[in-house]
Length: 269
Ligand code: PAF
Image (cartoon, rainbow, N blue to C red; front, side, top):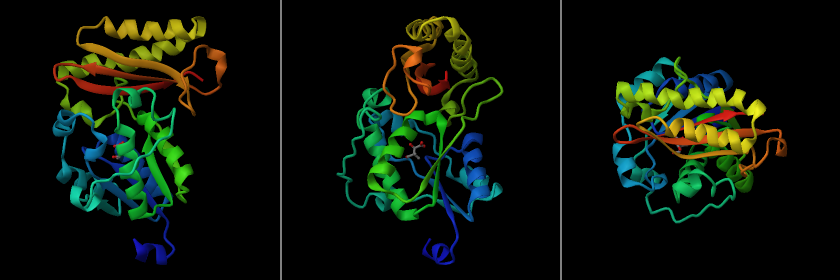
C-alpha cells in the first residue's frame, strides 16, 4: 500500500466477510469509480461472532469471490488468515452507546466490539481514503462512524444503498443458507416493511411497529427477534413519528429450519 500512497493514489476499502454477491459488487464498483485503487478484504472475523455455530456455518467461497472481484475491477483481494489479523488475542474494547447497545448490540453481546476490532485493524493496515459499507447493516454503519470519529481515522465513510432481489429480499451472504421455499417465505420481510411505509401514514409509530411484528410472526417459519423504529443517527428508540426527521425501522427475523437470521431495514423519513 505504501507504493500506491507514495504515488499519490487514492485508496478505497471494501471490508467483507466473503460469500460475495451483487450487494458487495455494488460497493466494489462504486469504490472502483471513486478511487485509483480498490482493496476488498475477505475475512470471516471470529471476534464478531458471539455464536460459535453461526461462525461455523457462515458460507466461505474464496475462489468464487476472487473471480467476481477480478471481473469488476478490484485492485487487491486481501484475504488474511486469523493469525495475520490477530497474532495475539485482541483485548481492546470499544464502547459507543447507544449505537452498539441497542438492537443487535442487545441480542449479540460483543458483536460490535468484534466489528470495531477488525475494522480498526483493516483501517490501520490499508489506510484507505474511503471505506464502503452496505446500509443493510444499518446499525453497523452507525457504530463504525462513531469509532471513526473517536479514533480520528482520516477517511470518509461511504454508506451504500441496500441491493435487493427482484422479490424485494435484501441480498445477504446468509441467503445462500435458505432453501428455495424459505427464500420465498423470506420475501415477506421486505414486502411487509414496504407496506408499513404506507400503513405508517395513518397509524401511530407503536401501531406500525406492532403491525409489522404481528404480520411476520403470523407466517409459519418466520419469527421476529426485534423490530425497532429508531432515530437514524443515534439509533435511540422513538415512540412517536414527530420525534425526528431521520427515522428508520430495523428488523431481525429468524427464517426456516436452521434457522437463518436475516436483517433488513426501511426508512420512514
Ligand atoms: O459487514 C460485514 O461483512 C462485517 O461485519 C465486516 C464489516 C466486514 C467486518 O467483519
